Length: 78
Image 1 (cartoon, rainbow, N blue to C red):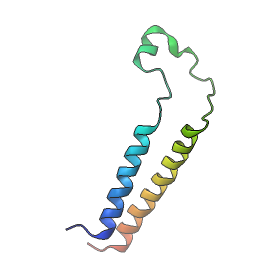
Image 2: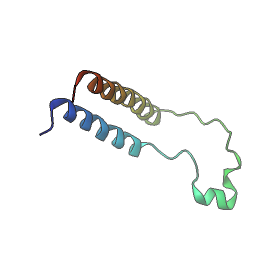
Image 3: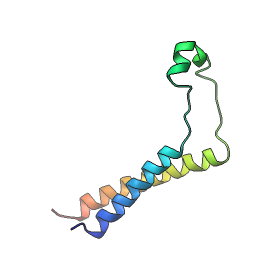
């Protein structure tokens, strides 16, 4: 049986996966590499609106996941 902290860690990991899947691609992919469309690799594109919110949420939830994992390792003696 999973303890409560295992469920919290599992829920946090599912949230990270969903947020990562919601993020848009930042490149053209393989077709851009073949056709030469990726020539402007170093052009700075700024995230705006929902993309920026999802990016920040992903970072925050990833930090929370890391802290929970460290706390579980420190506090729970197996």
